[in-house]
Amino acid sequence: MSKTQSADVEFVTAWIAGQLFGLPITRVHDVFEAERITRVPLARAEVSGVLNLRGRVVTALDMRRRLGLPPREDAKNQMAIGIDHGGEAYGLLVDSMGEVLKLSADTMDAVPINLQRDWAAISAGVYRLEDRLMVVLDVDRVLDFGKDTLAA
Image (cartoon, rainbow, N blue to C red; front, side, top):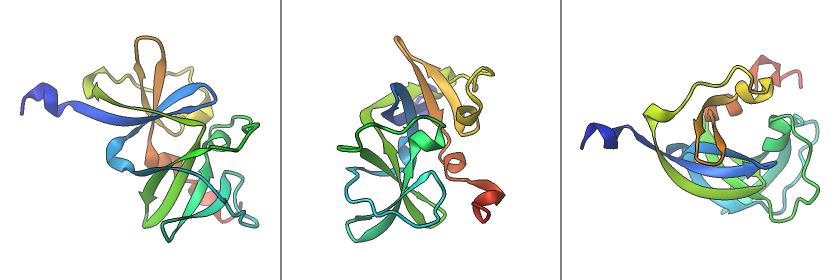
């Protein structure tokens, strides 16, 4: 395998409020339509609830709330990206799915200093594509609510 091939990274892309985000494909287990989300009393604001995915209970995480964005006007046809973290299953709720992109790890830029604070806190970097900017989400930071999880 050449050096160029070993430096390529594949990303599952998704759109949230008109912005393109990427997640490393190695962290993604499923992509599915989020249906029948059951609310969880006293859950954090980012947690939309739980859903059943092939017999497995999955925590649905509203990425708009996690990113400090306004809620969707229409929750129909909402997509979810299935992630496992710390032995738990999560579905990251996004507006729509993009495509799988294969990009060189060498061309990823650091998180810009002018990126909104909420976004920068859960980003691993950015890619400057031809016609848009793709923000790479750090899955571990997206799902790390910090010490305040008990207080929420």
